[in-house]
Amino acid sequence: MYHTLLLMLLVGATLSKHPEEDQKLKSIRDRSHHVARSCAEIKSKYSENEDGLYYLTTENGVVYQTFCDMTSSESAWTLVASVHENNIHGKCTLGDRWTSEQGNNPFRPEGDGNWVNMNTFGQVEGSTSDDYKNPGYYDLKAKDMSVWHVPNNQRVNDWKQTAILRYHTETQFLTQHGGNLYELFKSYPVKWMAGAPLRDNGPSIPIVYDYGSRETTKAFYGPYAQREMEPGFITFRAINYEWASTAICSGTKPKGGQVDAYCIGGGGFFPEGAPQQCGDFVSFAWSGYGTHQGWSVSKDMLESAVLLFYR
Picture (cartoon, rainbow, N blue to C red):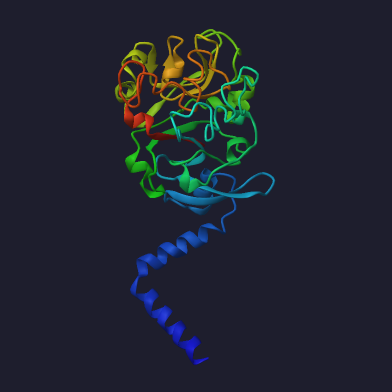
């Protein structure tokens, strides 16, 4: 009894010496009691205005944790997925969840198909060191999306400050495509032989920059790639000259068919130089690792995760 009372007094004394830390811990603890479908709902319903980790619930009551960007706009953005290249030298091998972990295979034209299934993977804290996908990717009904390019292995609290690019859409384009990427990619399947380059590409949506610009976006890609892209857009299901599909051209609109040099994710088969193109960051190192020559992107772009948000 004496020891218990002494411990309580000591804890009370310790807490009273660190009121700011106490308040922060209380705030984090209170977040676990929020019931909401999205970060925007948390912000409006509970007056939360701090970026960080929050708990959300799906339509069916599944609770999951994700990152909320509460400060970039009047509403809030919900992190739903990240694409990260864990090994640019591994060609559709372990870790290439957004293309194929089963090799470069014409008999698996859709690869692992994670753009259009309900698989979830990864932990929110590891979104810049591993691929991440939570139920919000297919469960939330959103209007717009935001994209952050964040250097690998950054702590959650440093994502916004360290991002090399941050931008978002404002056209409410997702309302025309089922409300999320899961539904959009059903209409624009990411697979080999889905169509012809340029003619059968998916939508290109103009973006607004939160950090960076059209010029800095273009500069991160290889000199050859810069000749056939228009920065200031995000494009979905872009097809290359060999009829291989990539999923997202982040920050760009293709004007040619070498989209594997500046678009990410894709189906399970890339014919040219097989298997040299296959992987989540496709041909980002076609002319050498981070050389920023020929078709190769800069090292900053190659070594950054692409974080995808809804609102």
